[in-house]
Image 1 (cartoon, rainbow, N blue to C red):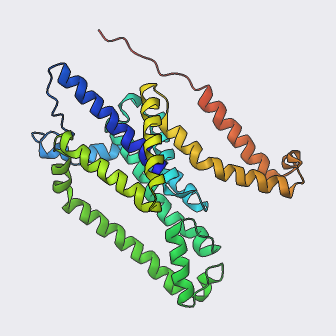
Image 2: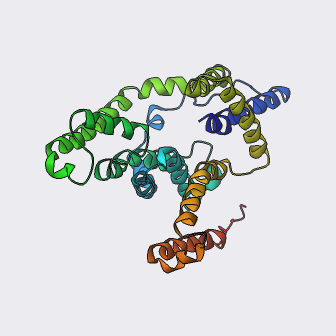
Image 3: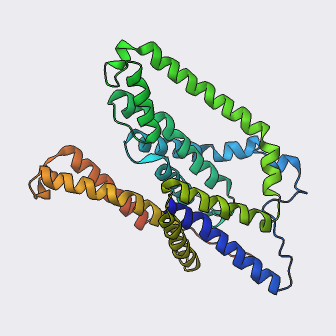
Length: 301
């Protein structure tokens, strides 16, 4: 978490502060606002046309989040990054991402939210928790005499349907709270950045420290913030770095287990249909991304 906070939040704050300093030296107004108070009310909410335009992005990212959520150990953070990356690759204006593009927000949040329900698949059907919340849910079920597994749907189906109903109601309540708090959220982002930046920095340091209650997390976050700043200046993808950082240990564990099972002979993987399918799918995905035609740039008059 400290790495993610440093790479995403603190490095962006450093970039924005640098832009403010340059703007002040150039004699421009340094009180840059994230949201203009004079913006009409209808521009502060998502219109029907905007929702329709982003529907395909949300559907794609929801599918990504469902697949990620059904796999134990990956989590919503990875799903959010993958949903954001997929939305950016499919967008006709990828340069707008990172500047408040609606498709970027829709893609990340749809994938992030989709993992919640999908995470119940391994949790309830197999008894394998995908994250901390799922582990707590399994503990609560066991305390009440319910053992997660294939038989739980036959023996305690009414409890599970009640759980699904509660999730549906929770989504409706979440929508209601979002509508009620919309005006407050709009006011918060209308404040000048010199007021918002200290609050964000304070929350970053607090969040990084509370996860481990160690000053090492603070140093780690600061180091990755500097690395993220350098990567942004050199126009490297931070999202790709974070995805590799998250999936790297999982890949190493899976590779180690595979080598143990096959006696240090990875070529035996080619005798398994499922393994061949995923290898072909991976190769096709890499080929499609590497040889995708570049978008045509129209010359403006």
